Image (cartoon, rainbow, N blue to C red; front, side, top):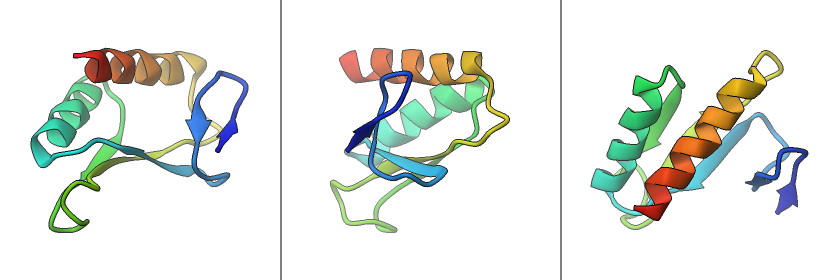
Amino acid sequence: NETNKIGIKTQSETAIQSIGVQGNSACKSIANQLISNNLDVRAILSPTVKEGKERLRICLHSFNKKDEIKKLVQIMSQAILR
């Protein structure tokens, strides 16, 4: 894992990142929260992936604004702490 300048641990050095969110319900719920805040994410659910390995797929790119990244981190943090 590598920590970038804003403190997010990433699994990859590519633009596509995944964040594990166990369970289809939880994964869909967090994805919907992010989408309702104008963030483009995809919930990758079982049976597409093995049960328990569900995840959010996020594509970071050079035209993301810092506020978008902060919003992503804030929503994810709140969702995980619930």
